[in-house]
Length: 483
Image (tube, rainbow, N blue to C red; front, side):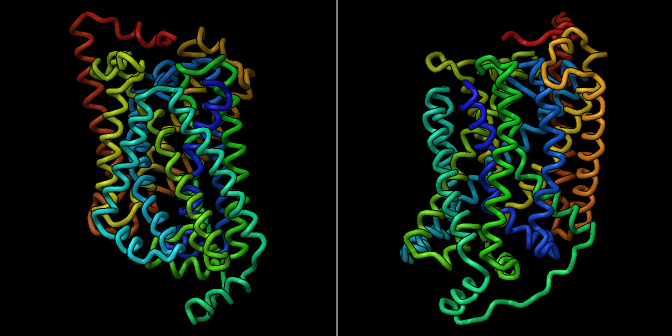
């Protein structure tokens, strides 16, 4: 893959539910954020900036498939490398399930805008809420198995369509005002908008909202996992990571600002309590039916194109584990014709299927979002720590760093990253552990800890098996995997 395909992979993994749903459903998940969604969204870019720099530094020296696993296992510790990447694998599989699951409300809104009442009612049925996400997931699983060329032919056009149709949302949002929206609601629903003053949120509410909105910036790390399939990886991987964060962040701010320019936050907060609201569906009040169908379809495309990009990312993590011998070797098997890690792709899609079923049983997708944030914050912290420890643990590899090669600058950036990301993780964990839930398994923190215990058992079992066979485990992690 070249720079375009790599950047597309990162942006495709970032721009989806993170922009179309979460900045609006945040009104329900973090009550009291009100009109301060945009400042919280902007603040959430700070930890993403430090995490992106850490990934870029490590990618420039270790351009291999498996990204975060390779980085931490060679720069920090094999166990922590596996834990960091297993956390990432699990979280992104959950995210694939969440993205697939929330696609159906977009399709339902298309049917509503087109006045296909029977279709919209069918799409709201339990059977369709499961059948469509599963069909989308496994269709893109087949695309990934067919190879990089098929992947690029699907992903790049979908990404282009996402930006074009998202641009329609941005233009439309800035063309209309809150007064226009109020008149449209009065005509369509015969009622006035709720009137509520947005007080300045407390620091607790603001930080909590920022940690949730941080989920929108997760995804650039998918670029690092494709290191084994990149052209000129020492240069293209870090550049693609930087471009993905910059382009996605700019698009996020314009998109969210446009929607809130047209739709009062009070209405968003009111509606989010009873249904899953999304940006195109909200703008449907002020747009003609035809344009509403177009922009809602754009939201559906934005969600759907997340799936192949994230599948590529998680499958390469599993492949890297198996290649090093700390996961069953069958997972590193390549398809005899397409030369893709089809076993790893199928295993990751199976985990995402479990996530779809979990969303359906829980009746909400925010548990998946919380798991994603917990797991990826932990992953990003370990990447920053890896930047600090790389020269001491593996000085030969450290000499190949091309991004921010000055050691003093590396120490400052990674240390600040640890502090910022650690603060976000602490706030997010506190929010999770104090939220009222029906059972412990509806909290992301204990679920994540349980998954890490499973990862620990797998690692200890596989490493013990390697040592019994007389394999020099230390030698494996002293070198980079084959290119």
